Image (tube, each protein chain N blue to C red):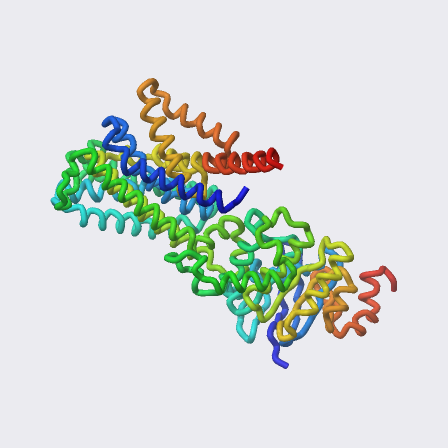
Length: 247
Length: 324
């Protein structure tokens, strides 16, 4: 099994607060891993360190064998890493199609072309429309994002992440704010993802996490407290105590 | 109402406007013709600013500096070295672009208000040079007797009407170039950067590079406006590029409608006309300008073009309701 993502003793401190504390993690190609833990456990911060939006205070991050610890976010994306956001991070004033077009051209050399109308690149439009169709937003292409329902916006988040054919996808609480019905649809969508894509999912909804992943890593106050197959982790007394206050 | 009808309506509108601009001028009184010529030159400047302000979201307060670099290229080369139009044009544009390339390295390290302050400071640097480098620029005496271009064509550009058509050609050229750019993939990227820089980064864009290229192009086009300005005015002085010109340019874009190109031209027309009319009656031009700006922000934050679009949408809705 090849390791695609490797974190070695990664820490992130904000002054005296240690948001991520000596986290070591190893993800294999095609693996589906859930990162769970109570609020404030450092999960989203961890994602920001992996995506490059924050730099670690110490430690090392390797992606496909390459040291990316201090690499700029756009270069990590070029290596095949994308993420979605817990708090929806789209382009609210633009149309759904425009959002997707931006995601599609992001890793293509044509993004620097300034001599031809974008409409003369039909392949970009086709790709954008097919990604929207894959997430179920085909008929909303012309809608403005801020007019979409929350559920539709979460679907678009996934679309933006998939547009560049990523090799590794970080999903930050994909079902955040979704109704139970919407969560089911989202889970079904994520289950259909190409099995060769490596998936790292932060989730609060245990059903979704267990449905989509085989291995679970539990964070608590920035530290890894459990890491293993689902059944091992759920049986772990420390994990039970953290989540249920049961000893 | 048919949205395609709206598009054809706009094309018809442009065609009519262009027709008027081409056919009308020989019938205009001389004063209005000079105002129109001035408007076209400032439109080029305003559109160049719209590229970084309206489309990329970078508020720059030093844009007059690039106009000045273009203008002084003409002033110095044409009066002292007898350079022809071709030379001054190329030097003016390249110099403005090159200085933008240098200034961009400094300014784009910052964002938001800090970017604004740095561009303001850099604009003042150019103004300061124009003022103090007396051996080169004649300081605040300015450079006078800039001759009109000689292009070997049957018309003398010393006359107002042929010169107007030269400027019109320049305006149309600048408009077409900028229009291609904003509709290109690069242009779409700029809009994405304006809307959410951080998201663009994680999608995979080298945001700095795009901003930088836009900044340089914007400076070069402003330099082009400066070249035309020097020939139009026959006289180049530091007041052509001081802070108030930068501010007026920003207001032209805001008033007309950011991120629309044509809005910048409309804003330029309004400001140039107001300035020339108002100055005939009062010294307090800047006060009027301030009131106009506040009025725009309060009542039409998307500018004139935005207000027209909204009005167009309302009337379509009301029309479809009344015929329902």
